[in-house]
Length: 208
Image (cartoon, rainbow, N blue to C red; front, side, top):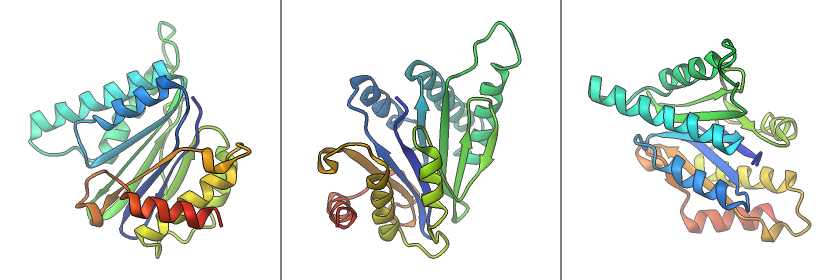
């Protein structure tokens, strides 16, 4: 898969942007991720589809288990730690094969955006902005230039679209299909797709 998946922590929440793969398997995985039992937590993965499915299934199981045991939504920091331990355990025992994927976990909790990246080694780190997949280095260099603390959500949507169009390899950018979604004050902390009006405006400004 190795599409460009990235997230930006904005002043009012956290934004997710994805360049969608034409492969039907990646679309199935996208729908699988969106069926996460906790709508306030966003997941995105890049790497081997089969491995990504296992990681997503594990994360969903942990969300459900925490809610049944404590009656509350799991913190994204706690979930990221659990996912990292599971992925890392596959690198320490010879009976397991290491996972060939990375995962981003994000949410708007405790009145602030929270973003974590767990790589294939099981290393877990918190970020203000991060990307995984192909062209990660280039995307990260562009994200470093974004003033995240003062960036409002609508402006963050436009910024994400601009970055995506700068790194795509397609000769006709208008034919590229990508997805934008966010969670924060605007969505009452729930993960929602960016409204079509705002999505279209972001595309127009990015193509200028």
